[in-house]
Image 1 (cartoon, rainbow, N blue to C red):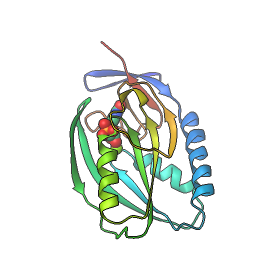
Image 2: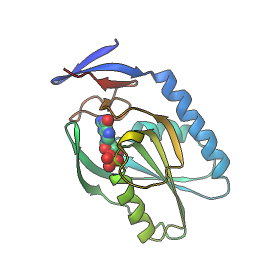
Image 3: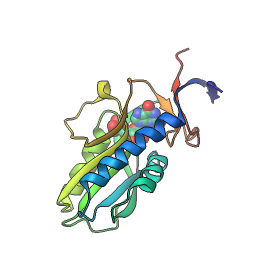
Length: 179
Ligand code: 5GP
Ligand code: MG
């Protein structure tokens, strides 16, 4: 189906599962090339990145560890600008190569906060792998090493991303339809 309804909003199919999988595989190939011998710790940012992290990690073949943190900044369709840490990092990152795995870099506020925290905790090398980036929404000067896809500045759901908790299970990406 190419149009769906979630609560009060309509969403139209914009990126298919097949396009997503091809883009994720390319990121995994680049990571396999760059992270060989670095014993990286992958840090999946919950909730949104769970599907990307799962597909990405199935295609990463360098020895590595994976862990999770949980943050929240969105309420409904809009970022609040205030990033809440709901589950923190337990592992030591001192001297480690860390690859942050995010669903989307939007304003960059969340990523800026994660990067500052990893630096303060003593990570020696920090890289960012994001499934999506909205270049037109970026408000912070952050370096994103791996980007599966770039999208316009519209609200999307699916593939881990939600509207008010719904739509995370969709395997394709849908964009909100203006009403
Ligand atoms: P930022 O701090 O870069 O503005 O936003 C980061 C977080 O906001 C992302 O990790 C994601 O969870 C959420 N977010 C940003 N844009 C969208 C969007 O279009 N749809 C959904 N569902 N979440 C988004
Ligand atoms: Mg996120």
